[in-house]
Length: 120
Image (cartoon, rainbow, N blue to C red; front, side, top):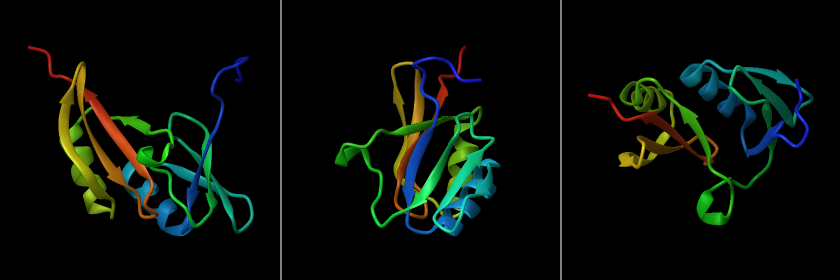
């Protein structure tokens, strides 16, 4: 369902669509629907969106928005990202209200994964 003036869809660059599809399928359980050779839409991600073929990357230090995923088990998510070919850009660190890490997908786009602080 679309809501007036809400964020509805996100598109990101990917130099290798097949590599990114494999990574996000394996690491996060996303599925994909291809629309020609240069575009694939992702599903089961919490937000609708897609990857378009391009030779540039999305990095916050270049002014791009940072897409942040949520995890119930941050350490397991970090291990999974490494296992399936993501590279860790920033190890787990604390911030007010939680902890997170940053990683690069196979195409060099930067993402983050966060979780809440453990309550005592």
